[in-house]
Length: 283
Image (cartoon, rainbow, N blue to C red; front, side):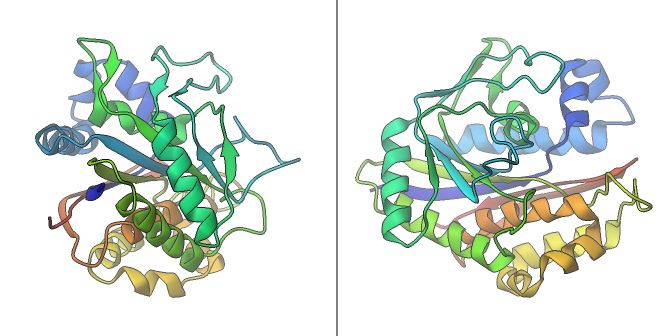
């Protein structure tokens, strides 16, 4: 049977992509080392853990989906996922490898569990996946991805949005799906998005480090408490776009109660609160 063996929560942002693509000298300078240094720790941990698959819970930024038909949840069931062109040309990565069989199993399990994701047999992934993943999974020397993924997109853009509690329950349903898969696979669940940032209006550029760090503390120690927050609460505490943190909450729901935070890092920089957490799951 498949097992959930770890979790990762990580911010996603185009700025992370630009710094990564600029090369190691830029990643390791004084400005960006506080972010990229901890990602190196998580990359080393992941290499030691050697998961067989990643389930990546993220949100699309109107690259695959648009406002005329925006799914609440969308699940990839393909064998590969091309990189989306977000307006400046697609980043120079090969398509990410998928696992269609595991994707279809999760789809059937979620529907039986009273979740109804849109099933995507073709899916381009944008910076919701491509911001953090190269820093933990891409073998630069080989120009190849190491671990196949199953992507799961959550709507945080077009109202009505799934509530934080619904996303927590989604993560629990993903866990049940993984544990019921008959193949012996070790799976790490990744949740990407946030932390605090506001990209419109009079609060443009606002970052709230105190709330960001409290969110990560609660996620590690008392995650169900976050289910009581509303989207309005999250917006007031962390900015409009910070509602992406429900992807972290879904990830945490997939890990089970015994998961413990290992690497925890936070870096407030310019208009973004960047966060990173890795979780160990008891065998």
